[in-house]
Amino acid sequence: MNFFIRWADRFCARHPGFGISGLMRCLVIGNAAVWLLSMMDRTGTVIYYLALYPKAVLQGQLWRLVTFVFIPASSGVLTLLFLYFYYFIGSVMEREWGRAKFSLYFFTGMLFTVVYSFAVYFLTGKSPDPYSVAEYIYLSMFFTFATYYPDVQVLLFFILPIKIKWLAWVDAAFFAYSVFTLPFPNSLLPVVAILNYLLFCGDILFSSFALPRIRQQRKTIRFRNEAARIRREQAEKPYRFKCAVCGRTDTDHPELEFRYCSRCAGYHCFCQEHINNHIHFTE
Image (cartoon, rainbow, N blue to C red; front, side):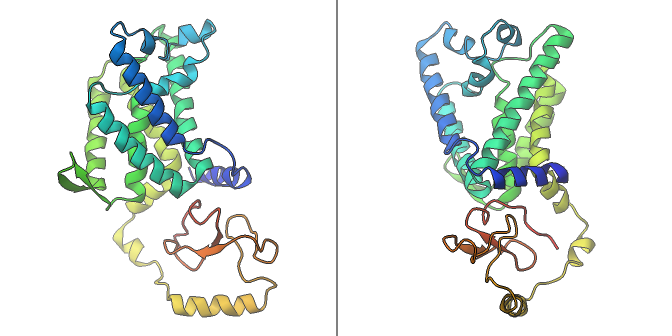
């Protein structure tokens, strides 16, 4: 997983324009549009032609490889509540990771789901439930938000304040329940979604379970002393700031702004493109 994260960070640093700006907004608008059309189309024709059927894809209906993510996971007014929540967490993660990494995360989840659907079709001749294959991609995205912001409070049903980490445990229980209760091959859809989450957030998740003794051994950073040390080093270098991700300096790129990350262990500088798009130093 560390290898994949390093590769993903390098890829995003070299291709900052990759992906779709405001991807979550596009997905929510698409889901809302399909929801409205499905309310008027009682026969289910619209959703049928958007769903991921491997057999239909092999017959040339390639649009299904993309349009399945626009099928809402629920029906009725509850759909609007879910879409609002997905937009909230997706927009926050796009700001945290940057456009390229968030798009890569979602596209990887889509790819895993498509590969899984075709594998099941070729092995069994059956397809996973085409109307719910995208549901777990969105639900697993909630885990990424909870990993980065576990103590953020939200109003459950706009009334009860509750921390995100407790909702994440409820989400995890739902995933486990789905694995044990859904008929095969649908029972493996939550596992596929979790694999995508672990690729991007597994290192943070596993480090949070480190033994307290190990965490206590981490050095306490004295920022005043570190700042003095950085100033001494900068006096000996031809630049003041250097990005810890891409290596660009304020001398070579005076148009860039540089900031220090307070969540990293140590005193690490990043350019404006990577201050919210990097793996935090832990030691």
